[in-house]
Length: 187
View 1 (cartoon, rainbow, N blue to C red):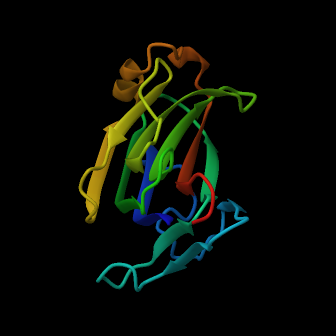
View 2 (cartoon, helix red, strand yellow):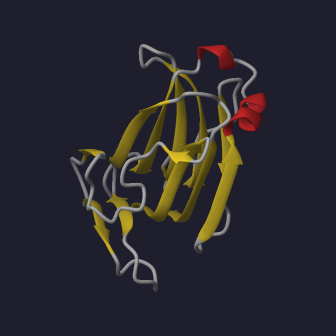
View 3 (cartoon, rainbow, N blue to C red):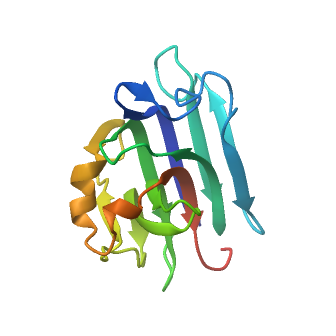
């Protein structure tokens, strides 16, 4: 069985001290977030609650068993590449085996042009099995080996140096994607 789980508390994208993500602390359920799933087999969930971490704040839990995905995302306008991107998360993926099968849990920051076209992306990812996600000129993976709660932070202008195929002058929007994914046949 493939299983991917992402649990996240406060997620911030800020420029000049202003938070760009709406409801990035998930205190107002999933308001401002779009939820999608493809679930022919297994179960999926995208939900908020305070029971996922031993603190009184809300978190979001994105989970998927078997194949395909569950995700929540939000797109914002980017006034400058001098953005801070930070979050606390627990990324966990597992699978029972089998040739060619894999699972991953990821927090992805996608860089978009003014038309919403994908320029590149940074993935904070826990992946298992035969997962083919890798670094390219427009994709940078930050592998989360530790599946306990971790704090993550990056300055987007610095991160863009890891994406030589992306022209920073084209950056106009960003999309934050929280995703749990598994491939292959049910098992």
